[in-house]
Image (cartoon, rainbow, N blue to C red; front, top):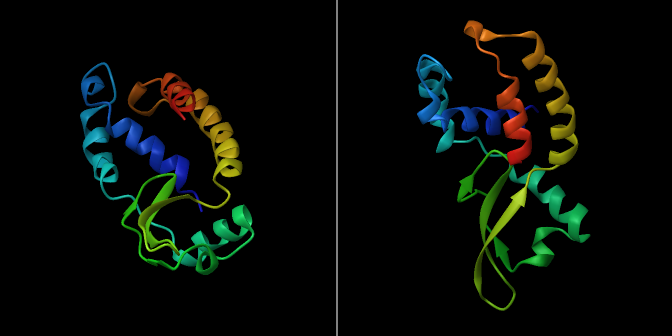
Length: 136
């Protein structure tokens, strides 16, 4: 469920190493969230398969000669699978997670509300939400 934008937000915070410290994001936050820069959870292939059907009107088995069920890499908004085209060419296929943009619109509403009403450790995080939304 709440994966994409929450992982992206955590990665965004973790990447603010220069802003960590007394006047930015606390170093403890950055250090805890840093693991998500390299180890984002992936979605099961059954969920990814639905994207092929929705976007192309066909299952992956018709689009590719072969496609790996396990991703080569997973990120906050998409994952990458190794595939072989019918021509025999080996390719990497990046697939955005199903329902991603609809969830993100709703999630940003929640983030704006939270940022306006909560100040963890006394830090105003509204700027962070606005920067993240612009970046995406």
